[in-house]
Image 1 (cartoon, rainbow, N blue to C red):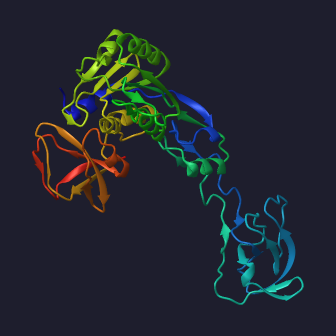
Image 2 (image 1 turned 90 degrees about the horizontal axis):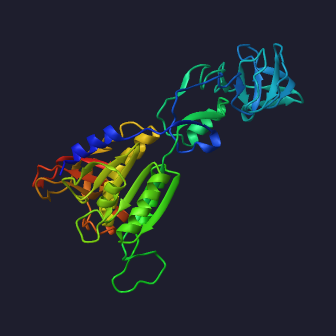
Image 3 (image 1 turned 135 degrees about the vertical axis):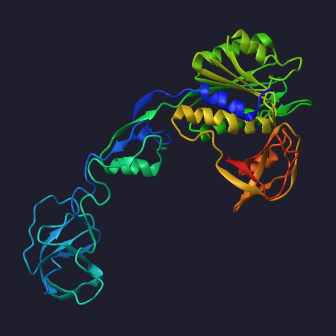
Length: 392
């Protein structure tokens, strides 16, 4: 049995990065940039108006102008405005030569048809003009490798004319749920049967982690059928998860079947609660995680070990670090020698423990915001102690 720190070190040394592929903007939402992006153009690429109004040379002492032109957004013609003249201009339109300021239309007084005046004090030279390159200069770094591509990043890339980017290819992940007692939600239960909560939960956790290609498999507690499904799932996926069948019961065949499939054991059993009987292995470049069957153990082990391994594949950084270090709000007794992961809620710079911490109990996970990591060496973690906190 190894420590949590040892397990994470082993996984960090054995996790694989995804291939670098090129995707169009419409396909890369949620993926991770595999390259730095430099702007190929100045943005804006020309001085343009930030308002609907009138463009003129505001350095002139005269505050009366004759309107000689109308300039709309998208107008590419070259226009030169003479001294004492102004142009009616609209948001986004190119600032004409001979002008340096835009006065919003609501601040303008109309003297007579075609003539305007301004007598206020809210405008100065350069007002309401977006200067060329004010968002980003040509060849300037706008996005860094390792960033998650969200709507904001896609908008920025589109604004500089980038249509395709290099990203880390998401892994294909399969999961096998074992147990004769499991029935799918929506079907009636017989005495002794329970609903399959691990399957839907694992699928949701994988989607939250940025995995797009997910395949589920159902296995009975029969060694031969389990072996066939494991062999098939290993051939079809980059990462394989199993829930249940990894302990020491008479029908727990997972470890034996993985050995038959020539999966190299990285570790088996961690000094932690929940999730002590967890297995991690590798076959070629494929990672295999066999998680305990209790739902809360599955969730906790996924957050601590599976999600960081997926994040590494996707090209993310700082994947094994806690998200926060917060003070616990009460004394928490625990078993010495085991790291405890417990469900909690954040409250400012403190974290509060939730009720229902048993490994079978999913109720607390439905309201939890985070997992607290309580050190193995403590028998009691006292109120005010700072602990590692992982967001769910």
